[in-house]
Image (cartoon, rainbow, N blue to C red; front, side, top):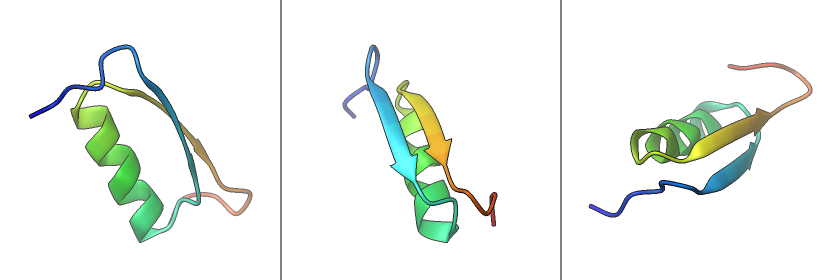
Length: 41
């Protein structure tokens, strides 16, 4: 599995898809910023 060490990722949207993508990136070592004006969920 590839690692995201040293990568910075911004995910727009904290719904189920955005949170899933953010979680997958975090598990691979990327630094993740999650942006959603309405909050998570």
